[in-house]
Length: 65
Image 1 (cartoon, helix red, strand yellow):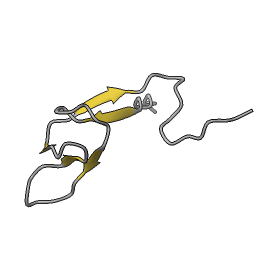
Image 2 (image 1 turned 90 degrees about the vertical axis):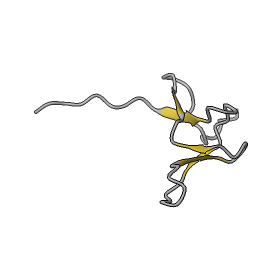
Image 3 (image 1 turned 45 degrees about the vertical axis):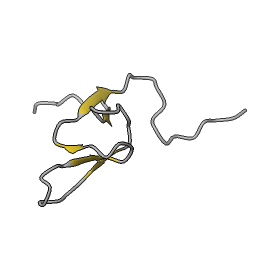
């Protein structure tokens, strides 16, 4: 059996304003699967950025001592 390596975690970025506020649209009318909530960009081209290992994930709460 072949074992696959896990895919690295990635973040999506807007190519216009470099914001992380990207949503995936499921619409047939515009044909654009991605929408930036910050600048309004709609399109198929999107930047994908790998998250370095050892960094806390987005949405994780910070532990306070």
